[in-house]
Image (cartoon, rainbow, N blue to C red; front, side, top):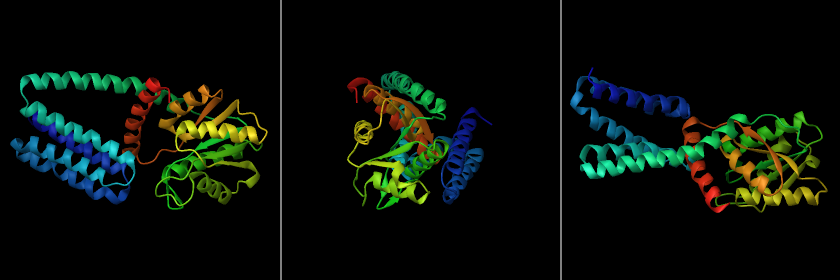
Length: 284
């Protein structure tokens, strides 16, 4: 098998496995279709480039049809790969050199932000903090998103391990949400058996910094000490949340909620790298 075919087969199988293991089983048919594209690559070597290009463009367009923004950020990866293929196949030498330099620099900038994100995600663990701040995520009507359910479940586990602790559910009401994220989590925690006296609510925030600022105020209003807290959020979000908490005078333990589907999470790690650079440059 020629080197081009090895590259083509490897790319198609990677895409197929990513869909098979990284999305809901409902989409296994997409993975099967990608895997079947290996056959024409094996028997028609000259088709390899175009088959891989179409597969990358198709995967990007497919992910853009999903509702959650995490999938849209993941879609940038195959679309970017397709763009690079076109530049390096048909672009003039000057354009190819410029593209190579920009790509390497962009990768270095991305990895610089991704390193602390991954460190915070992998080092999260248990906590005995007296208050746990649960950061909001999307609500569809009155139904919690997967991310919000995972965060609320992690808060329930913390409260079970720390019977004297209280939770601050934090998040305002955004577009497409019939109730605030805080109210959605309050209902969820109550349904899971958490007594209402252990739940404080902050329902005004629209950003992570506001989540933490207003949650601190809620704890103080209840007569508590917010100097030491635990923060529940998705693993990719903990670095930025802990940095912001520190800027507000709160020592924060990070508690990572369960991850969602891998393809979605890949996009959220991409998005978070951009948010971290914004934090470093603008302080928020």
